Image 1 (cartoon, protein in one colour):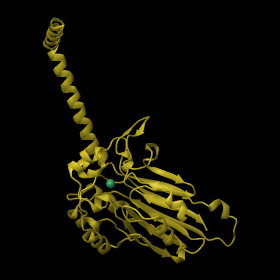
Image 2 (cartoon, protein in one colour):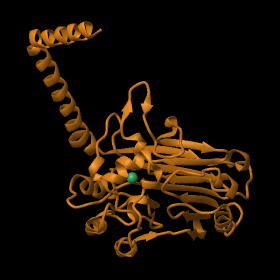
Image 3 (tube, protein in one colour):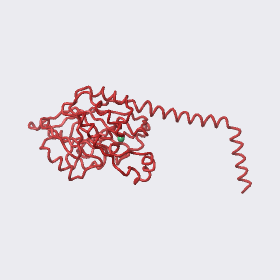
Image 4 (tube, helix red, strand yellow):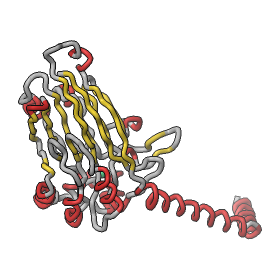
Length: 317
Ligand SMILES: [Fe+2]
């Protein structure tokens, strides 16, 4: 047995010595290609911002279309998510200033707007032209927590370390947004009576069914009910409360997508096939944004470019 072991060891040593040039070349190539993929993912694709468009007709639109008394609501909404603002910023702000120099009824932000307090300096640069009905936001987990590498690595394995122990004081974040004309909704609603529309903002980490249903109950019959939330979880609450269209973020579309397979993770309860795009729960349609960024420590993307989305919504109340 000892003879066999020393023979195997000798064979392995002579294989390495005889093929050392090939092995060094292979290891070097693997390192170089890994480095090239990382550079592309972090420096090219992570900044390849897309502006996408969708048309959504809410339920029960088809049923009430023939009702002559029903109110027809049509809104153009710009959905922005996961900006993770942290100094220095340039490409992202240039993109935002370009796409917000247009006519929208609403601009909505679905959380992770700031990575830290230094990001608040960019609040004033987020919107070039004021939307007709205003700009509204909800906060996300990165607005509330200052994540460390420990949370991002060990926390993936042991969920009790997923979030830092203490929440950040979000008052300066809310103040910076409010000064810039963006209203933060924290388990509260805004009614647009001329447009027969109600907008509800669900604060991170979530809301009870009773609270959500109480908010939607404030909307008169026939109103379009919109909702903003960060983490797409407990989505069954939305149809139960009568929400027609919801906007969510957090998944970043998976960040890494493999052709033919799709997103590897969603960091949420969503299955991988629902990592981004339009998702349905009964009569509620939810738009899950790929977002515009990520925590600067892990801001790389592959086959999953960052995106803002214009959604033209039609509702027959
Ligand atoms: Fe995020």
